Image (cartoon, rainbow, N blue to C red):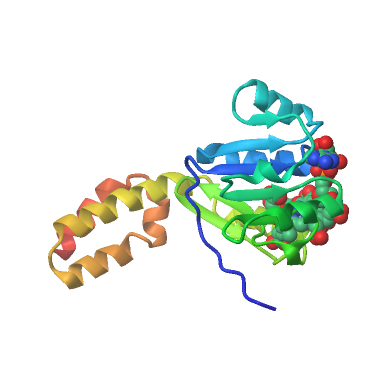
Length: 205
Ligand SMILES: C[C@@]1(CC(=O)O)C2=NC(=C\c3[nH]c(c(CCC(=O)O)c3CC(=O)O)Cc3[nH]c(c(CC(=O)O)c3CCC(=O)O)/C=C3\N/C(=C\2)[C@@H](CCC(=O)O)[C@]3(C)CC(=O)O)/[C@H]1CCC(=O)O
Ligand SMILES: NC(=O)c1ccc[n+]([C@@H]2O[C@H](COP(=O)([O-])OP(=O)(O)OC[C@H]3O[C@@H](n4cnc5c(N)ncnc54)[C@H](O)[C@@H]3O)[C@@H](O)[C@H]2O)c1
C-alpha cells in the first residue's frame, strides 16, 4: 500500500465542487464552511441543511445533474452521490492536478477526510486510511477528553510567548530552555501563565 501524505490546507478563495447533496455531502460541506473556500454544490435534490446554507449565501447550489464542465477551475472535488458509477465518472472527469475524493471508494480517491479535533490553534486529525471511519471517530472522541477546552487558551499563550522569546531572548541556551519549559504541565494548568512565565524568565536569564 502506498503511504498517504498528511497536510493542513489553507483553502481561502479556492473553488471546491461537491457533487451530491445528501448526508455525506452535508457533513463534508460542514467541515469546509469555516475555511473561506468557495463551495459549489451540484445536485438536483439537496438536504434541508444544505438548502438552508444555499439560502444563507454560504454555498452556491447549482440545482442540476452532474456534467463534466461543473469541475472547471475546481481545486478540490467531492464525489458524494449515492450512485457509484457517477461518483467514479466525477473522479475520472477531474484533471490530474485537481484533488478528488470519492465517498464510496477510499482506494480510488486522491485524499480522505480525517476525523478532526480542534482546540483553537491545535488541530488533531485521525485517519485510518479508510479501514474504519468509526474507529477514527472513536479515537477522536477519546482525544477530546485528553485535549480539553483549556488547550485553546494554552495554545494562544504558547503562540504569543514563543513569538516573544524568539524576538527578545538572544542567548541560545536560555531560548531553548524557555521554549521547552512553556510546554510543561505547569503552564498548561497554571491560573496565570503570563505571570508564571515572567517569573521563570527572571530566574533563567
Ligand atoms: C472521519 C470522517 C470524516 C468526515 O466525513 O467528516 C469520515 N467518515 C466519517 C464517519 C462515517 N463514515 C461512515 C460511517 C458509518 C459506519 C461505517 O461504515 O464505518 C461513519 C460513522 C458515523 O457516521 O459516525 C461510512 C463510510 N465512510 C466511508 C465509506 C466508504 C467505504 O469505506 O468504502 C463508508 C461506507 C458507506 C456505505 O457504503 O455504507 C469512507 C470514508 N469516510 C471517511 C471519513 C474517509 C476515511 C476516514 C478514515 O478511515 O480515516 C473515507 C475513506 C472517505 C471520505 O469520506 O473522506 C467521519 C467521522 C467524523 C467524526 O465523527 O469524527
Ligand atoms: N465517505 C463517507 O463518510 C460516507 C459515509 C456514509 C456513506 N457514504 C457513501 O456516500 C454516498 C452518499 O451517501 P448519502 O448518505 O449522502 O446519500 P443520500 O442518498 O443522502 O444523497 C445522495 C445525493 O446524491 C445526489 N445525486 C444523485 N444523482 C445525482 C446526479 N446525477 N448529479 C448530482 N447529484 C446526484 C442526490 O440528489 C442526493 O442529494 C453513498 O454512496 C454511501 O455509500 C460515504
